[in-house]
Image (cartoon, rainbow, N blue to C red; front, side):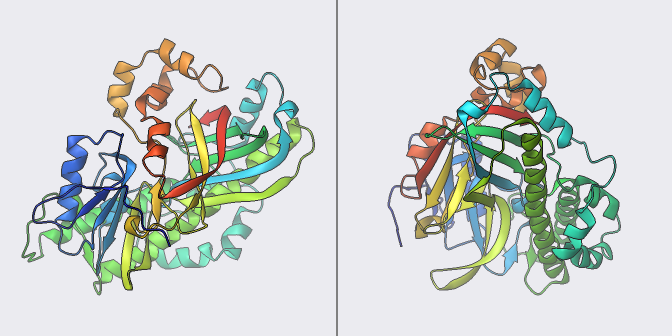
Length: 403
């Protein structure tokens, strides 16, 4: 099992160590301060691991791995619970794609609701999928406590993309093979669950005798043994499983659209479906820990993962090296260097169109906050984590659907 030493020790006085794989990539002062706040919590440890795509987040820093003992921080997981990536390799080659991909993009956008969209009618098989997966039965227990959750919304949003940085892409690898790659999570219901528990954790702060300074109310927590701790673990586990099924259902719809418009093809054996916003119990250094990956991917030895670049840049299928210092983790993407507001003010439409000239995608002002200039260099991010993962495939986008 690898235990590399390419991290920098971002020491925080009076706090647990912070190990950062940030060589050659920017680490903004606000993000560093947020990391120090997290590392100062007594139940965090043995240290915090920082990935090279690190940037300021709400509650916890995006691109961080936060292990905790006997406590859980809902805002560290966030509201896009279970957000992650899926990718499959097809037997199609670049030569099988039409010269103009606009019609194919339109077809995918019709088949998969994007943004705040949902299915107008519940697609056939959705109810069966929810029952067979056990999601429907587990949902009834959660709904009894959280009255705003609606079964019809859950069914209508299964197999939908969402907005923000979520996407569907067609990519080509180094051998000109066609991949389908997508990025989404637990949609509105996951947001509802995350928001509910973040609010409950904040409310509980008023009744706690801490014995230590909590520097940010977004770091409000539940302790193991408390009823809300168990409720949260149950609900967040459901949302993570729903997110995985959402990606599977969406992938099936995308592939169906491709089958209508492209030559016959099959799926290759290489497929990946991985979370990058989630929490789960894991054992590290012989100790049972609750590990929150906020914009980070599990990278155990031999485990496949996905590290996407921004619109117009490269993406990677990677294999984990099982680095113990990172709690077997790697980055989840390139990571932002501009807030959404700053990107919309700084990046011109002409710059966006030039940066995405080789990709069939939206070229309008509504996606300027997702333009490549808003993100770190994916090459620098990959160079900073060579002891965390090895590259299996390098992908370049040729079509991108944004929410």
